[in-house]
Length: 188
Image (cartoon, helix red, strand yellow):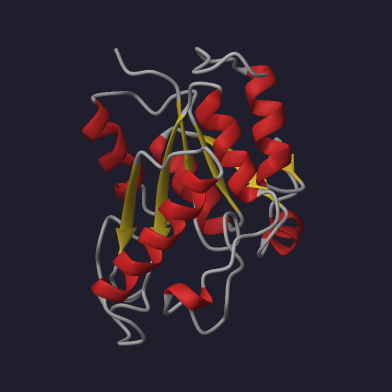
């Protein structure tokens, strides 16, 4: 049986975003509290997955190898804080491509569920954009909005969103209280 898990968007949720893409490990800078949030979720027994649109690959801004290096830096930073990223799904396609993986389509979220042999019902997808919320709804996840990245603008567009948090750390603290998982250590 699959244990509890959460799915996170990357840019604007875990790290600061850029209108010109995050193109190298040097440009990847975590949002304060995000690494601690992932560590808290990990310690509380949640597996943490990432689902991220990365159209910069299709646009020639960076390569898949660059993206892998960015993700290696992110994983290392998370592990240095005591957390773990269980898996990363990304869409490298151009927004005009006809793919099922680019959010707001639910393909990446469904791929995570398929890899786990699990339903997405009751599991949160945390994002900062209307595309993230749309993907969560289409996949049957619990849509969660954080106000980092483009989250404040998204809240104005989607004022009916039920779960809204200042940042990933606020989400982690509340979600752990709401849906306690099997603890991986003795710390709260």
